[in-house]
Image 1: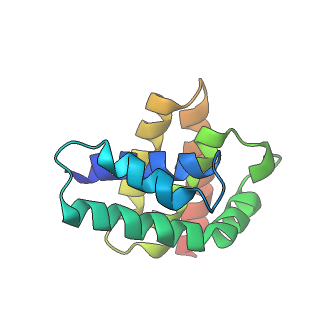
Image 2 (image 1 turned 90 degrees about the vertical axis):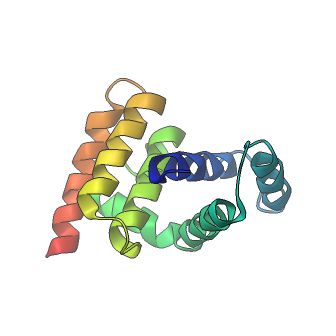
Length: 136
């Protein structure tokens, strides 16, 4: 599975957490993975680890998002936009294997696919602000 497809699956896993309690997620993850055809163990492990790393840093990621988004706190963001942003911010700040520009570009492309009108520019703006903050 290529990186974009892995990222899309991680986005979907993160999105599920918005609608399921923490106690339900192990079963939800298992069901989700069982539905993916030709899923190998390496890809599954990669997705599980990245998903858990993002969940473990959710408060820290949300703090960065709240600082970068004037007038749009995470509590007011659409669930899709927030999920895309969390994944992208994790990649930008904590995943050394993903260049910042790639994380931003992939997030914008996901927003075009899964978000509403205006999601892509909203996400691009917030991630651009965070990128400048991280490079300082």
